[in-house]
Length: 209
Image 1 (cartoon, one colour):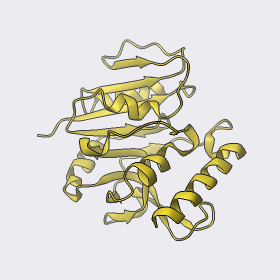
Image 2 (spheres, rainbow, N blue to C red):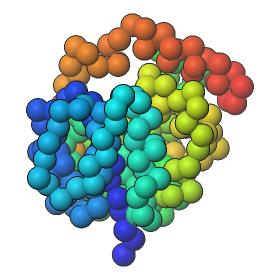
Image 3 (tube, one colour):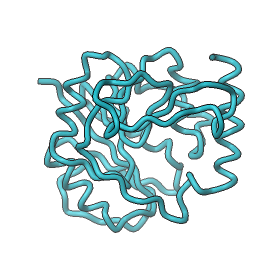
Image 4 (cartoon, rainbow, N blue to C red):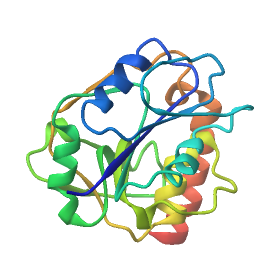
């Protein structure tokens, strides 16, 4: 049976974090927290890696290299895994790519105009996409890359478009998760972050697609 490690990254959404970590521990004993909050404390049996100052969302990629799982799940702190989510990823590990529960297909050089979102809960068969996010599952060969320039607003695009543009990426069919609503401080709603994301996407789309 392959070993799966889970890395959860968090820096300010702490209200549900204990619950999320507990849910992941119900599926694997090897859970890591990339914590940039400076505030969170827990007695849960996890690997608690604290960062100060906050390095941003790239912390998840750095911590993934400390794990020893055959596969590593990188998870946001606004996703509650339901029983069976890890098993669903293992079921589709035969696809030999980077898997996720949400992603996008690329159809042109504008991120906010030429990409289409795909969600796990909306599909019945694996869907090939150009990027994945929120909760991802990858073999170790897709973990190691240079983090220089991997800023928070573009860290997922950096992983998929710059580090591993040729890796196969799929959204798997599953409803074994709960997404919490976006809060006011999230990067998705931040205008500056959206502009950075658009510029990075446009540059690398033109170079690689």
